[in-house]
Image (cartoon, rainbow, N blue to C red; front, top):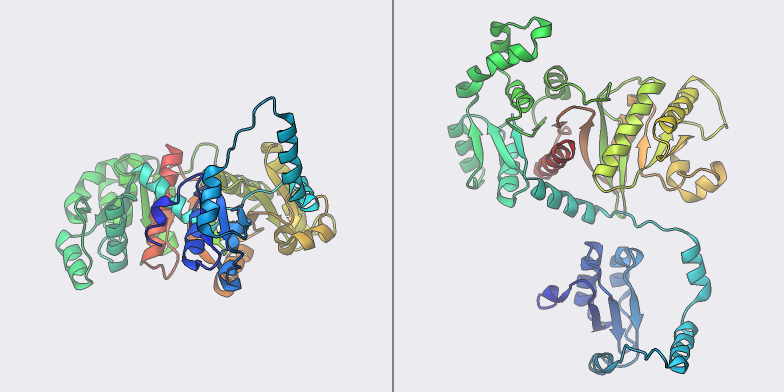
Length: 450
């Protein structure tokens, strides 16, 4: 199979017997990861093992053409090589014969069904993660990590630095970082920046006093607050010395976000900060918001959360179809909470008339096409939503955790929205991969905001 991999390039037609499981798997992986192959041609009338076909189902559903012939691979390759693809412009009889031959081998009803229903390719988790790393590498952003002496942070920073995902800055005493790295067998790559907070703290006192002058902050108060590495990192971000900040391995969400709200503030046009999680299901990526920030948003705040979430979806390659979640769909019920969701939906529509958004919708009506046909048959979003906006923090946080723990789903985030510059909090119990992907998310946010 290793000899096959370099040949899997755009436009290539792979000819192989149906019992070559290794090649079929390699072709499917290439297709899932975005390589536009011409197709897979199985020879000798050999049917692949059903278990292999099930593993490759995602590639087939994504549009990888699969054909089968009775001739062997050698004869098939020869015939393909000898095939004259050109038809003389005046050879009408030959053109009609070829058209009739091709038409006789097509399933007209299947084609009509497929062509009659617009189909948008879903972004698979594998492609999403691959694109995430690729875009972060291209962005080449400098990300500060205030928890610089934590083993998980150090390992994630080493990975990001070595792979070019971001230029990481660890805030910690260099000797402490080296000792932790040696104890955990972590190889620190060249260029990984380590800044001792004790040595740089003084330089940020005056800038912090200036940033908080409207709150009557004085130098002694600034010095005291700068004892916290998260505050130092946030001032560095405010001064454009770094492009983003990631924290939360040992700090609480409040400790990570509070300095950002005080020093970075909200982006132009934003009145609040919200969050989204990227929920990576086996065959698609969904977004959940807001799950950590706003306990009881008003209708106007919920509308803003929906618009921020839609913008985040677009920034990460997801065409947003926003479902405003409630315990009722359409006009089937009334009540204060349902009316809030209905009003928020209307406000969002008025602000962004080109956005596909609908609500109130129950979760099953938003996610399942069969339920959608019963509960919301005229909805442009129901049954195929990919951005789910919950009515309050209680609903959002509970749903995200229930799905993460009970379904076959991996979550990335939370990613904060609405700040002037990117600051992101890590989920509780974050592991190295979580930190790496959050750094990548932050780098892409910084690139988008710039």
